[in-house]
Length: 308
Image 1 (cartoon, rainbow, N blue to C red):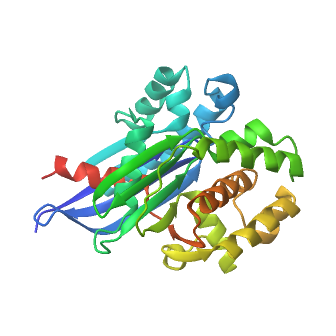
Image 2: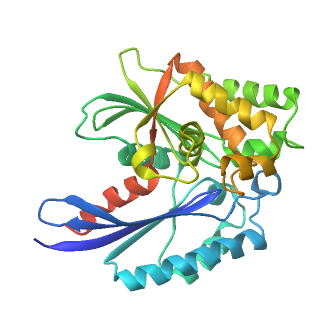
Image 3: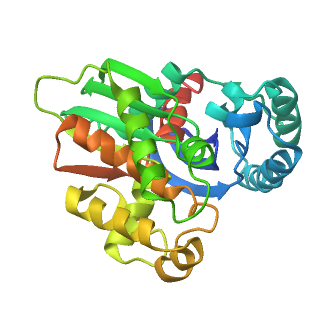
């Protein structure tokens, strides 16, 4: 058995994620996950308004990448693939930022298109062993992707400029937000979804990224992220409605203290939950599965061919 260590890093608008796994070159299969890190830099802070990534955000990202580099060296990783998404797609100073981040981590950074982000998110979320039709919703900080596929074949995909950070910065002035602010966000999401062709045949809906995993954590009454309990957890629309009630009736401080929501996610979680709720209504589903996988898994799987 020839075993290699591979890593993927997802530089998102809110989070910087790193996944490290062992890969069997003989069977082309991931053997097991070694480390899976979820750290928040809020790289996309102010990008929607200013079209540039600010120095404070860059420094937060650099601090995280400095830690990731230490782990990559300690683990003696054979291959590292890094992608950046919405914040760096939109930023006018993306070349400067990519150069600074790349210099820190020691690897090139690939700023992927919304279409490619959708493909990789689907690849990382779907389970090849299930053989089911799947609609994947990836809720990011700057953009969200909807991808419909039949087993391994993607039939339809689209990236929307609706993300938890983007909507919060654009529409929410104080927290908790007013009824009018919430309705404005809902209407904005509805208008963005117009034109996406939903499949006519039976499918399961999966939602991925920090929004659904945190909502599952709230629903399950967990004090922290527990992969074994959250991954593939089936949430219904009533669970989601209860979560939205919590998010609209509590201050950020109470969300952090009472519901153990990460301080850097507490202010944007409602916007993410509204995206999920409007997609649920759009699809006329009454439940969805929460996935802890997504883009970083797709990047890792996509990179396997480079080791074969």
